[in-house]
Image (tube, rainbow, N blue to C red; front, top):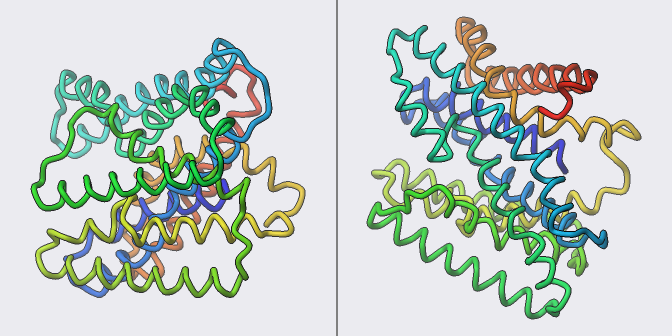
Length: 328
């Protein structure tokens, strides 16, 4: 599940940057890219659900100090280092484009949890981890019905916020609020793992196909007519994306064997590094491939595979050095 989510994160960024941003809106290549982009929106919710399934369901007895020390070394330290790395990278890219960036502007981006476009995820996860010891107390005492009620109400609140934000354009600016959006997913991963729905694979596939088609049609329709309501089908807490994420999670949980055999576990250890490194790999590979003038149907899969492999290999190289392993 980690590997699929990591690959799909790369896919969604490739589709957006090399496809949707570089092609005229409404063109064939733009629509192909948007199809890839929409089909990968489940990646972050599933990653959060997986974290909830593993961390909230853990039987390990840890003090607050032990828990926070482990998570700080796994998330906070890499976040600080990579925020610095991507700040340097941002200045380098700005220099290449001939649009100098003021250091104060980049500092504000870092303080707002936006040092680079993909690092928001680590800021969000850090706050989920901050509350995880207390979330564990909830799941140990609550019944499955109580948790289901909590999750449904949480999604209703997020959906209400989504509708309000879409209509008014008013969004909270403080980045620490971002983790609240994913709290229902966090608990949902635990609930599905502990009380797995015994649905037939065929039923899950039919539901996944139906909600994906309905979501994409709704998003594409409103995108073509001003785009004001398109977020209702596209956001991480939109109903279609919630349905797709649940379906993917259930399908992955039904896998009888690892996708790549016994080595899957070792490959999965590289997923954080892939996430951290792939933005630089995408900037470099995107510049190289864009000169080939390929259609989106070829460019996006080719670039996704290239970025994923380069990021994965780079991560595995860093992991071989004890002094650098903590970074990825």
